[in-house]
Length: 188
Image (tube, rainbow, N blue to C red; front, side, top):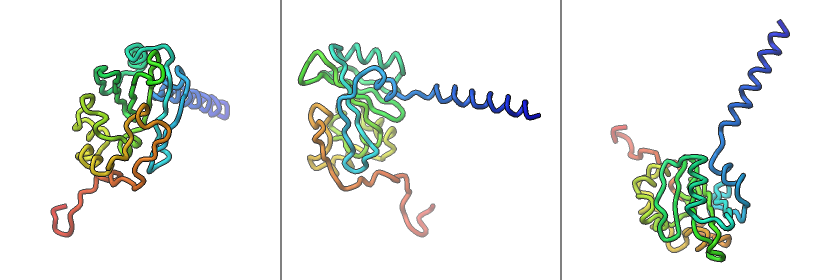
């Protein structure tokens, strides 16, 4: 009986290890291939970050092809004005030409929380529709609400804001925005 228990325990352990191996995120894929350049913390929650990587001597299209071959995004913009946005379940990946060396591509992998609480909505103009952002970030009318909150202090991508980003320090009201509101007798 004890041998059967040990055998089953080993099989369960191997299964758990194999299942854990299959849960690679886009952040893992990017960080395994490209060197980390910088980490930008959210101005309201230090657990939400944008990690910045550099692909030396690689164009946006080459980096984009590599990333999308490894993991297909839920949404992907076209490459326009030296920028592309790829949207995954938990991360936004922004590819831009490095302003310091146009032969390099800056790869920014930002958590959804970082995007929701820090990005300037106009950053996504022409790349991702606001209704898609509302759905991904789970915020009704995110673009309008974030524009009102920003007042010139929101994140504009690494090339524009860089590691010196400070942003709005007041917490966003977006967390828990799923509450229905109302009061007694409001039809809940």
